Amino acid sequence: MSDEARAQLAAALDDALPQTQCRQCGYAACRPYAEAISRGEARTNQCPPGGDEGARRLASIAGVAYEPVDERFGITKPPAVAVIDEAACIGCTLCIVACPVDAIVGATKRMHTVIAAACTGCELCLPPCPVDCISMIETAAAPPEQRRAAADLARVRFNRRSARLARAPERRRDRAATAVRQVDRDVVQAAITRARERLARRGK
Image (cartoon, rainbow, N blue to C red; front, side, top):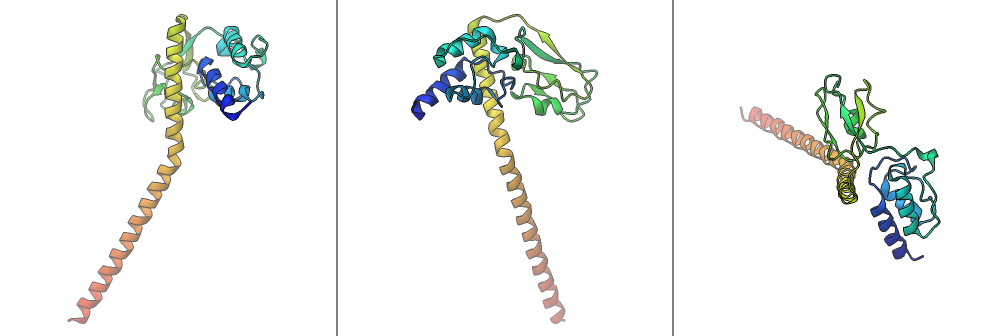
């Protein structure tokens, strides 16, 4: 298979995934899992959120035999969203850091809340919460077109977050460079001031 054909296959597989970005498949996100399938390095039954229906779809796209979801990667659960007990929340921000789609908003030492429409139900926010104030609430199953729209939105939010995090080191370097330039200016200004003071003393 050519690189172009493999890239097209990976894109088609990615489109078929639920975009929960939950990592249950063993990969960092849905796209890397799709790419691994396209290379023959992963099977099409490693996505519990997609269920057996999703596994059938992936197998059809990849042109391989269907296999039901391998429960070693997790069990398929009803759709759910995270809900934060606002009275118990201590504002640690660990859930905000863990959320792959920026579905949690809040500030340090302030109450956090979940944007239900953006939550993928990945459950990645549960383990880091030190006070166990986050729970998953089942939601009604949406029709296929709504699930696809939600998946597309989740992918957009995930990609935006990934791009922002990738830029973070660059921003830190820029801030450091700005600080160095400020120090340099301060040093130069101090030298000029000392020189003027010496000249002023000589003129007396």
